[in-house]
Image (cartoon, rainbow, N blue to C red; front, side, top):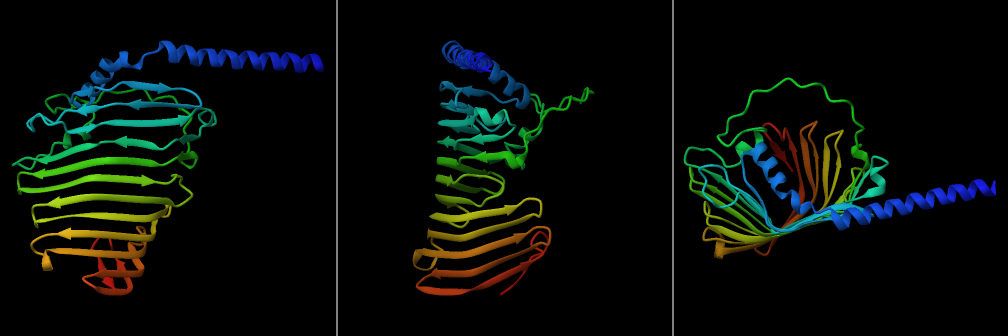
Amino acid sequence: MARLLKIIGITLGTIIVLMVATIIFIVAFFDPNAYKPQISAAVRDVTGRELAIEGDIELSLFPWIGMELGEVRLSNAAGFGDTPFARIDGAEVKLRLLPLLRQQVETKAVVLRGLRLNLEVDEGGKTNWEDLGQSGADTTGRIPPATPQEPAPSQPRVSLAALAIGGVEISDARVNYDDRATEAHYSVEQLNLVTGSVTLDKPVDVSLNSRFSSNRTPLKGKLDLKTRIGFDLAAKQYRLDDLVLETTLEGSDLPNGSLQARLAADVTADLERQTASLSNLTVNAYELAASGRLDADRILAAPTFKG
């Protein structure tokens, strides 16, 4: 028995040494940056857009298998100028290696830094994002005819119940929306979003703050939102617990040109029954306070309210 245990120990030790040596070899000699042209070409084939990967791609393998990116830019659609459709200063996503062997996905916080997203509508109503939903479109926007494919062999799937994300962190994001047909322009900037751990069986803490502006009703301001999101995807039920929304607005149409407001509530929604409610509702604005409850029916069709 002692001899058998010794053999098993030597075998396991050898396997561990080989695994560590393999990881060291991959990290030392595999350069993912050498594949930038292939990655850009694949994106061009699928979307017709140019993907520029300016920053370095860094890989980690153990105990987290993941990737860190520097600056990345995705070109705009044809006819919308040279401003990139999207750009990021950096991103990071890492998955723990060992749970993958058990078909479980466990990640660190998914990090996205310096997102710049430019959404545009031209004078004819065409958008600069509609072509992205056309998988396989070429640079002219044409979609090649479908070709018969052999059914793919069944692959083991990761259960959604086994999904665990350490959190989501989006910092210093900006989204511009420019509609030339209606001359409407909206922008959200300095957007920061932080969540707690994300699983499908526990509520998720969410914190968001940003600045925004609009030219339709001359308005600008900032908001801070905190809540805890719970959901039952199978039952199509969602809730926002301890929701607190604080906002400061500035605009010529507001009394005295500005408004500071605070809203707090617990929100529930049932998409199957098309009902929603705001309970423990309090609103404070212009040195006035109101409290109560609001219920809604047919929220996906023709909403009606009472409260």
